[in-house]
Image (cartoon, rainbow, N blue to C red; front, side):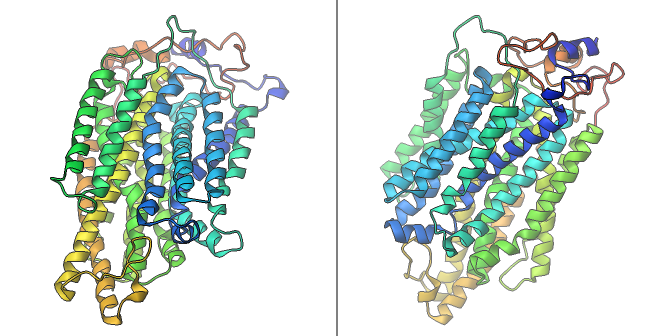
Length: 574
């Protein structure tokens, strides 16, 4: 029965296929490399400008507020477009959407590099952030469409490793570009060749299954899009500006809080009534999804903030240059890459994921706690060892995405995957602001305690200008920054403990070998109530559908009757 169901929903490729169609495994690899390149440049687009911003500000005449918004608008657009892209992927042709996102990102990168004024750069960064959010989301959704969860484990490991490299390599590459004859504009233009190459690969090789024609007209949740934009924008603006641009009781602060609360309530009401919700609320009735979101809040907080605050620790607290700071974080990057790759391959080989995710979360908690005694004089060997443990945990925990995708049908794969990515991205953006408050509070408390007030010499970017400080004051401030990493990591450890507890309550199952959940829905019904499904993916067993081969990249391994589905009754769990 399983074999027949799998044949109905998934084209099984054999060696007898025409030679011109190519080896399916080779096609998967080629497409994956293209997707990986797109994800890499998209993820790096925020971090690559971090070391270049002082030069950019000087050349285009931006002030401190504009300096902040150049970075913030990219994160905002990325966060807002993540769930939108996921939902659109469930409604429309994923391949065309991905090509559009690539074209948008590439065009925005060209415009950003050509900007002559701060306003032009900020507007271009909005478009770049939108393209970035779509690219990253669609990369995950497309991989879920062309390979089964079991095979996806190793690919997910490579994608997690790519995220690690892009996070840390971005500032390094940006610093090198700015210091070279190329200039800061190539921090944006460097992405264009990767985008063009990915478009060529995707257009030539990527084949994605198409669903049945819908009996009703597709409805886009425009009101939901507007409301989630208001929720994200009001939250990020309030957290980043409260206490700096206004106080908690200020009318602007109260207005932002009001917009957030009202928009959130309206969003939930709208999503519960529309036919095509942006974020399907029924997902939150599933234990695995809810607990995984709690986990990803912790993962996002660590992934997006460690590079920022390790950079401040090394540069401000220990007087290293930006390029040296990037090199000093390499142990964490290498550990994350190695763990993600090894664990991803082990997940594919065994079909189990929970033991690796729980182990990764434990490693992250231990790694964060090891930073509690760190100060400006701590041994670099000790700091590197702590970063290795933290990075290894980050790499091992990335497999959880596959576990979430394992329990949902293909028809809502986009919305489910983007919901997870949305929570991860939003928590990362919020964590940077919250951890920044913790670090600045610690620094201010120590400096004011010794000097009586914070030094007033500031650079044009709003950052403390150490070169303008007297030697004694500079030593005090640097010492304060060296000591401020510990309270940040303490808060981070607390968040990770909550994420770890949530992870232990997720039901551990093995990963299925079919692409679509509907191939085993009868077995699923014996154990769990499946998530609501829409019309099934059109059968590919009898030939190509319109537009060419619909699933030429599917795994050529047929599910065996002797291999019950992981969610079927009686299946052992981890």
